[in-house]
Amino acid sequence: MSNSASTGTPMAAGPLTRAVLEIDEYVSGLGWDQPARLFALVDTAQLRSEEPGLAARLGLADDAPAGALTPIEQEELPAGSPLDEFLGTIAWPDAVAGCALSVERLMLPPSAEASVPEGLDEKRLAKWVAEHPERQEVRMTVGVLRGGKRESALRLREKDAATEVLTGSDLVPGLAEALVATFAE
Image (cartoon, rainbow, N blue to C red; front, side):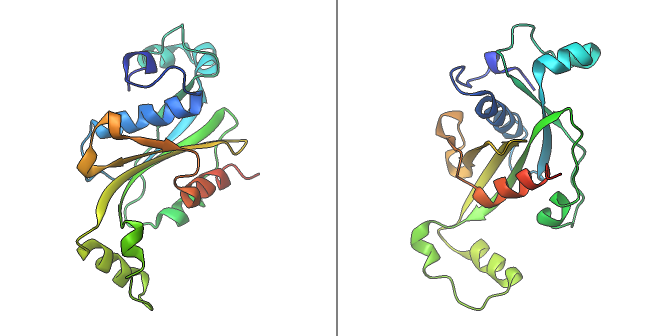
């Protein structure tokens, strides 16, 4: 991953927003139809002082803004394991300030949600959404800090450009809550 200074990430954004946008840009470079990707977020200054060799391999600049976060991709998530169940098994070491997850999903616009048939189980609902003519593919990157602060970036496949990425703290509240829970003591 490259550092924020060389990307289109606005330097005025807070550290968590910059980290989420950096992850979005990195995953975007891998193309679509990717598996979910989990990242630890570590304090950049702390990483440089405690792990200078790793910091050098990651190309971390000495002039990173105060509070900057460095995303470190974790091992691939287990295939076939429901995401919520997998997240329930995570325990982060104290050195991890936060975490982020990037995942692709299908979504419907609010206008189509009213037409969802009642009584569908999860599998039939997923099939119904996948066949709906108004479905949209979206990549959601959600980051959280230990204290509960959260940030999200959404990228639609049909508008796949850095200038079209939507950010906000409450865009994917359920996923943000699941990530915050990985820091529960």
